[in-house]
Length: 316
Image 1 (tube, rainbow, N blue to C red):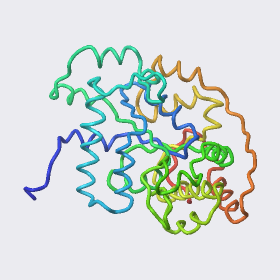
Image 2 (cartoon, helix red, strand yellow):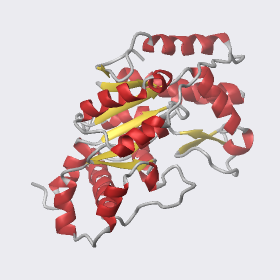
Image 3 (cartoon, rainbow, N blue to C red):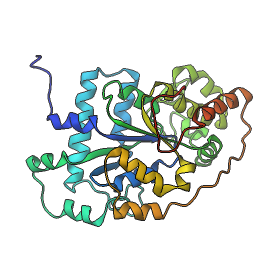
Image 4 (cartoon, rainbow, N blue to C red):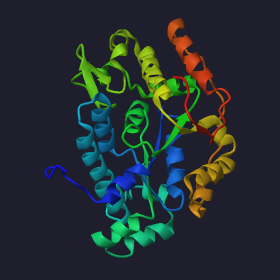
């Protein structure tokens, strides 16, 4: 055994091995689904932890050795996310934020965390009863890389018709010239610099030239395609089509809780009660034929899949 290899509590590896990871394109219901999962019994939920995206970027690009990544990732997930959250030290009480703690945590659970000071030796033991859950959109490539190190973690992937998603991305101007300029504000991270333009690191190199040359709409298309192409590399995931989920939220929530081996809470039922059916808008966009064909192919891959079902694999 290498005496120079740093070690953590075995509980840190267990935390990551059994975690729930929710991802999909932005605007596909990941926030609603994350809040719902965060309300389930014995779940400790985290909304888009910035360091997760950074670490996964290094993993996907091969910039870190597996043992280096494991040490950093497990330290962050266990010592920075799970333990202090259970101890009530890192709860967000800003009511305007999506990560506002009362969006998903019950008053009973909140009082449990804030009712006393938690010592490390006791909180680590208590942490064994909880499953870490993370929501991080646009991380399917990184999810595929992560499963090679942690094959047992639970992957939940959301989907929504591409026209609805692309309309939303255009409205937010993620790929407007001023946001991709090297000196402009950064909306998507981590990123690479290619021909003096910021390119999200989740976009494969094979698309870099096309991305640089594309207009704002087709940059969004490439971003979308890059994500769902990764499905061909992902093994065994729970599929959630957002439109279908909003039509039957209670039924699908019960199914999801059963798969995670947890229970719905009163908070879960309150969240479900606020979910309204989503209309199929599908306003068509002027997408070039070659890219439209690829989008249609991705859409066809999801046809016939039941929302809430476990998918062993899918062609990307």
